[in-house]
Image (cartoon, rainbow, N blue to C red; front, side, top):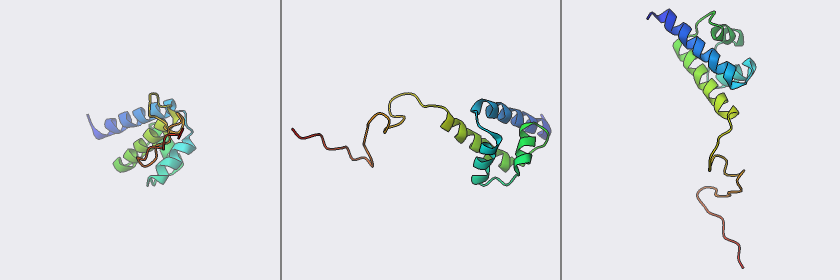
Length: 101
């Protein structure tokens, strides 16, 4: 498999992930940029569409940005996913005092 086909396959995986993440291109680009990405928003859009390739490290940063946004958009299930939503108040490993009677 040559480098171009690998880059196209990576862009295709990113595009699929992007479409499932439920975020806008702006949100993805902003997260990518905040993580140190230096491609423009149109360059990221072209990469997602398979029209151009980003350098390896930029593609990795884009993967991280998409992963973070996907994780934020996906509600976590199970105990301990959001300690404040369940009324748990353990902060910094210190359990709250039980109520006195």
